[in-house]
Length: 141
Length: 141
Length: 79
Length: 79
Image: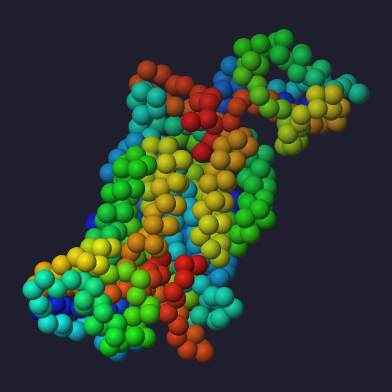
């Protein structure tokens, strides 16, 4: 739980992540977060579950790089990234990104940058499990 | 706790707010949040506490308008705004904004728009309590 | 009777958070502004926004209804 | 020996998530690509990225060290 960057099967708590993030600095005035969840529909198809596969060691290393780059680029005080793998059902949490800075603009921009970059850089693949069959997602939504 | 928009003395839980937000729709794929916290320094001054005064009825009505406008403008599935009043100490939570949408871009942009608008529109005033005396904040940081 | 409200830095300079002003028919919001600003100049130099019954007022010739709640507000600093 | 890894949609089309390829001195990554793409054309039409020992490789003339871990990866879809 104390690692800033994690890939895990189990769910996470925003309260715990934010509390760990805040503990690194009392100068943190703004925290931006992004939480990605499993939707029940995707392009008209009903989706009951999502299943994630990852190149674990490389994904973790890319997520750590991403965090360090975001801290440098936006002058963050700290940042955290958690991504779940395995199977999640509709409504469940998938990914959590938090960026803490002295002021809100850096925190919010960093948060958006990190989720955009994560989707492009981190070797994780998503399969939609639908009543009509399973489908690996190959485009960025 | 179930109100989407609140002004309150007590702290709040991100997990509870996000869970309430998510309960409104299973189509929510992205949730952007902003958490504002009390910093220990402001423009070189050590700040031990912040004290908030509000025009309660108008602030609540402006926050409700802001939420409805954000939902319409960004096509959100739901949004929540919580602002604390009274006295908070360095490191404590002040304001929480959450925007949930089908896709991440709308959620993240709405979240940023709401905190920018809140600061300009909602009648709440902040006083910094420092070892050198108290100071009402009159500019937007 | 007009109920006048002050908050934060304005209330601090006035020394109170509310006062009552006499109602006169056809009274405009700028009449009340002028009277109070003359009485509390240091507080009114902070005032940026005026609300009647919780609604922002930009047209200072707006006629004040009896029993209005008027708020004189400094620049906001919430969040 | 080269340890070749597949994930997600590529692994599904190949029918396994790893295989071993023989190491030859001065072997380049494009040599391995060509061999495997000929053997698994349907899987390799999805491949967008190649990594050696967890690092993205763009130069396909890169020489493969012995005992490398090579990953052939479809477009990512995490988050």
